[in-house]
Image (cartoon, rainbow, N blue to C red; front, side):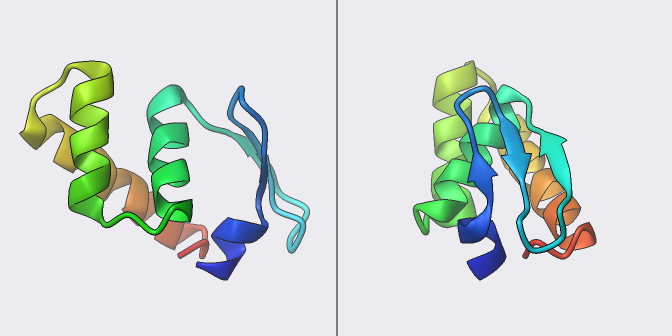
Length: 78
């Protein structure tokens, strides 16, 4: 989680990893998920936020969160 906390993220979803020098852009869903992780929320709580904010089903929100977490693991951010 410390790498997530060290990311510099602006309100538009641009993120910079000072550890690697990598930068990337988050879509609104990714930004909401990443901010939830940085607040120490669990996947279920984050999925509930996604479902509410983007008016999607709980299943779709849970799938989006799981997919995003997998991506973060791929990039060794989790």
